[in-house]
Length: 294
Image 1 (tube, helix red, strand yellow):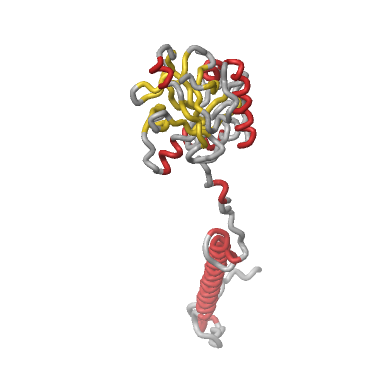
Image 2 (image 1 turned 180 degrees about the vertical axis):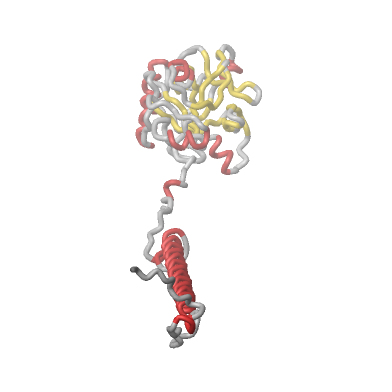
């Protein structure tokens, strides 16, 4: 029959005839497991610290490289010595202007625009050289010879200045101003006669004197007769350069110190006005130098 006796109890080995294993201390297996767990924990912590330090070092190196690169590109650093400057130095021509030079509206567009915020039309009369200016003036005098002009040079002759669109009216000193009036009396003819001399500020241009020694000059852009005070400003204000006119035998008179502004009559008052691309302006600013009325 099968043996149905219960197994011996481990708590009472002496009662069942077997001896307990005394070769190892009790709980040794648990100690091994605890030790292995501790070692594993330490290894994991050390690995995490090493990885973190390495990432920190890489980040630091990357930031240093970026800082060096940016410093070389935009600021001080080794790379800045090889980095060319993007700023260009303006040439002297960009800041240089010569308002005293005699130019016509077509060639003084930039100067007139910079000083007066006005751009004359490309249809403005082109400049004539000093010799051709006198030639055109002499031609004007010759053309007006049919109206009784003398053959003497206009730079030393007594002349009267007649309007193109009002041929019965002449420049005439009225008080301190110059107006466009008919010369119907002896006094009016004397007031309408001027001596044309070489320009005070530019000898290739014109200045106009009266019988009593005053000069025609612009002040506040109004033409008037005043005594020469010898100042550079007066000389420039009293100098006008002849320019070609679309009307035969006529000239336009451009200011030396205000290129692009011409003498023209407005309400029969002589004034200095910017060039305008209009028929009215061209006719108002066209004058013929004819023989002196006095």
